Amino acid sequence: MCPGPGLYQCTLTGLVFDMAQKAELRYRTVLWDESQLKSAHKMAAGPLFNIQCSDDAVRQLRLPHCETKEGLLVRGLLSVVHVTDDGMSILEPLEITDTHVVVNTLHLSAFGLVWDIIKRLFYTKINGQVLLFLRPLYSKSEHQILDVFVLPDNIPVHEVADQQEDAEYIRISADCHLRVDETYSVHCEPEAFIIQPESAPFRSKPGPNYHPTFEVFLTTDVGKVTLMVRDKNRTEVWKRNVYLKGPIWELQQRNLPAEDRLLLIRRQFVKRVTEPVLHQLLDKLLECHIINDEERQSVTKKVKAEKARDIIDMVRSKGTKAISSFIRALCQEDKCLSSELNLC
Image 1: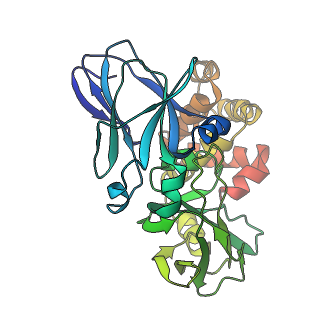
Image 2 (image 1 turned 30 degrees about the vertical axis):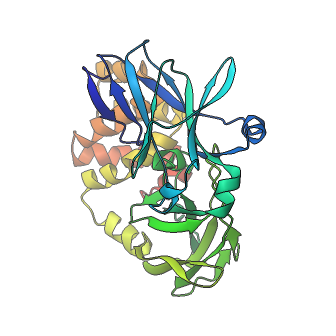
């Protein structure tokens, strides 16, 4: 909701809306039609956003780009595509700032940034980002896997994170400079026992599916690594010290107060627990007099995610005995999930 005229920026996508009046905005990423782009001698330079709002409410739209300062000097490199039911049109920018491309919006539908294919060939350097996701460390695992994503920096992090299931996003400074179609490799200290692939070309395709560019396999006793991304000339384009959640973190988790342990695993529990297990947990908690009939009925009516949140938050608020009963019940009803959450 935009409460009145002015500029509003989305914290997830980086989109900026210049509003003429109070209005509700709805927007999401959608698929590019590659054949349409190719016929227009264009290539996608970011996500395609389908935007819905009342007529005349949005005066201008500002789309985040990934160009370096040098790239912004290349005239005609960037433009905006407007996709409607009638087809695709190319909009020339009103302005290109250091971070955004500005266009007028007479009619809202799908908007996205595109590159001129020929001009992109002559200037390939863009602002990039390296995103790290650590897969869950299961109790019997002999290794941990760090997924490395090498992407343009105008790809929303949440779009990538939403596809990584139970992997933990490692928040770290991600900025780097990359060249489209340049070959890159990942290196690790201490040395990983597997990094695959050995090298990979950097592709700028903006989704819809995001798979790791590299997978780094480490032994479970490694808690810190120095990670590097290098180009084909072995020049470092990105280097960071990375702290991982290995067995030491699991030990610390087990030594936390019971309420803090549940808080730590709350997000994964909500995401992964199944509906039948939730009903079994409610029955167990009722039998143990942790909850009453009224509490059980109020939770049962809700959708799965809300049900899971209510159950774990209700248990956390009822003290150590309730938490112990909850953990014991979860270990009985879903041994796999409780083990992966380090509760059993």
